Length: 476
Image 1: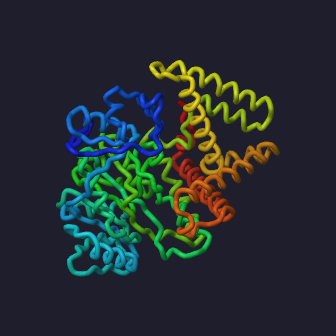
Image 2: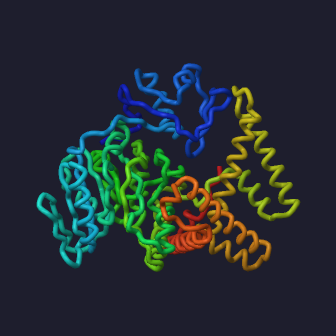
Image 3: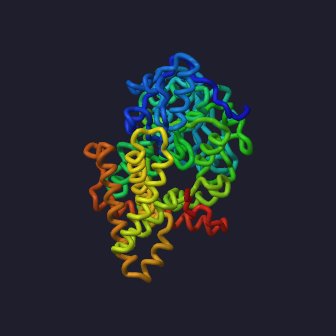
């Protein structure tokens, strides 16, 4: 299939809605939102059409406006309930997980009326058995989950394929919201939210994973693209157009040479071809997270090892932080915690705000808008740098801290504040009371262990690939 350089028009009746976090500036003359943040100026007719925060496609002009807002990430689709489960084949890669596979197949049988279920046994020690009506394909020797998914893809004759890992269990109604997104002909892939198995347990790691799993991308829907708030979706559960997968250059599907991060690579290759990828949290799939400390930490480190390969395949898309140069300088000056440093930070921020105001012609209050944008950029940079000091860059940060008492105090304070802020953020948005999430101290300790393990894997991958591309910040 050719690249989707010019996406096909949205169908008549397709509806979008502005993201609730989007800010209207200058009385609705401009919109600020999305990820990465985007400032959109609106023509008078567009302001009128968006007065209620929703827009339905009725002609070519509204279709173009809707596409612009969707691609900017300031609006999201509100498609009609999806139909067409009979056009979906479910592919399940499995290796040595008969209990999880049985649970998954029972969930599928009870809920989704798919065309077929194909189980790919990646050379399990005890050969997999499946019930009548489920097709089984075996690998004579283990080839990895990417190869197992591709093997299943080769068996698919329906327009769409759903990939579900054997340690997942889709919750009732999971497929309907995903199918709705495919009413947009430019969408190639849509993924549900991965939530914790209700029977996960009550230990420290289990409580942390229930609200902070690497697979759970949160309650807010999003367009998926590199360096955005949702930069990828995990391959544990995906719905994909078969033609889009088979038409990819290189590997027709998942890259089998990648033992980790093959899902990130798939999302970004689809994006590079012009396809749209969506994250739909109204659809949920339960996952049995690792909760034993050793396997959990090893898995986090394993995830980190994939960054170097991604940086080689997708240059510039895997920075630990992506900030403006002025905000990096301001944060570095403020981190000295001294009077001169704070003065430098204030001066740099004021100069950057003044320059930004000059680049906002046409707005009635450019200085106020520039001040809001500047503060948002500075806060975002501070958050990214604080997180990276304990996650991506901790070996280097530890060396600096070992030689400087002031740096050591700063690193410890940043580590505590960033961890507690992370706890407060998830406590506020993820329904903490009913989730069994940890208290602030447990969350802080688990968050720091999570970050240290990932960072160790990141540096190990950089050493293995002889590349520091995944460690370099992106300035711009």
